Amino acid sequence: MAATARPVIVAGVDGFDDSKEALRWAARQARLTGAEVHAVTAWQVPARVFAMPNHGEADYADYAGEARQALDAAVREALGPDPDVPVVTRLVRQRPATALVEEAAHADLLVVGGRGRGELPGVHLGTVASYCTHHAPCPVVVVHQAGSKNAVAAYRELIAAQPAAFRPAVAEALTSHSVQLAGLGRPRDALTAIEEAVTAYRELNEAQPGAFRPDLAAALTSQSVRLADLGRREEALAAIEEAVAIRRDLAATQPGAFRPDLAASLNSLSICLADLGRREEALAAIEEAVAIRREQRANWQERSQR
Image 1: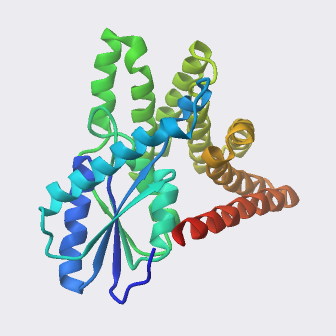
Image 2 (image 1 turned 60 degrees about the horizontal axis):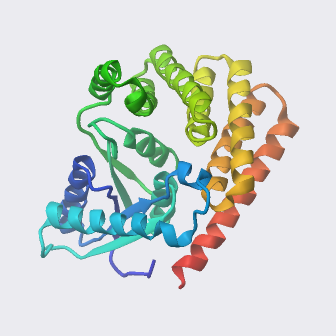
Image 3 (image 1 turned 90 degrees about the vertical axis):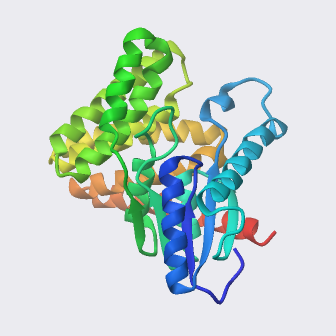
């Protein structure tokens, strides 16, 4: 990202209502402070595509094109065709949480919606917002709307009619719901929600081997955090060790897609090991995570200079 004399406000944009409201909030703040708004959309090829035979980079152009259209349309809808503040649009091929934190390294403020992309309202960006508030190097503003509880209920109704079609969606909604319950100081309810998500992803993996392994690893990582919150450290360690093992396998075949997630799980593994007094193992885990993050940083700097 090019240097600028103006303050920079980064706004995460996924084309849905919460992120548009976050973009409007960022623009209002920019008017008050003379800042420049950087509207950032992160896109990824769905993990299950990597399991398909004969996939290649040329097949991914559609995903980038759709992301660009969503970003441009969101900016127009939120700010109009001629915004009265400077707006720079950025399209990044990266996991959304990681992309926003990296973009925030050059920002004075990061603004994200309280939830994000999903078939029904209330899904997914809760986890991204949570990650950003814990890892961004600058202040973070989360623009909240309705929570994920309604989404979980809605998906349950759909599952009753079409179990196979909507089981992945309810698992995703439960993961987001767990994050929000934890934020409300309800750790036991948060654990119950994420345990149900883990069970759902295990069943989905049995039905479609390999297709939902990335989702299972993410849910296990969240489950480990929830268990640790309740002082159940040995169980937390078992969950994160399983997540690390899955992500190691995935990263061995698709490093660019899965190494950032491996680093996140290694960070959680280090914390669990340290809590149990296994300090040498904790150090080894965090050193591996740091090495991956440095590699990511170097790759990001290389891309930004092109």
